[in-house]
Length: 138
Image (cartoon, rainbow, N blue to C red):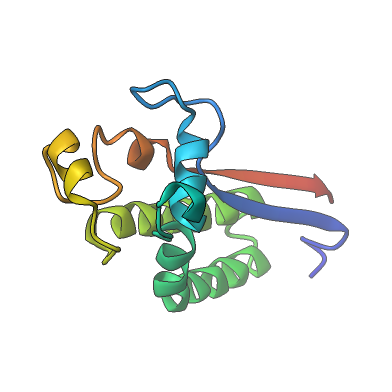
């Protein structure tokens, strides 16, 4: 407890605003539209962020427990522990993009993309999924 006392630390997993899709929209905007849907534009929710984390929650909890034990033994610092957790969570989200079951695409979208796989066109969004470790105090 002394090692992490007074420390505020977290890891954030998602798609940052920077990268752009081939049409010019930010990957973060495209990710948000698919994650939550845009009913007014006929786009259904296709959660890959929340679903990827939820499906991997048991493994992420086990990893976090092992990391906390290592911190307690002085074998790991909080930055490394959260980095490992972030890497695992980002991997789970990327896996969900590839393996998840989503509302099928409309025929017009399939014709345009030449693929029936939701969330995968250029691969830019999947490549944009990342994590950031934020540590304050300590």
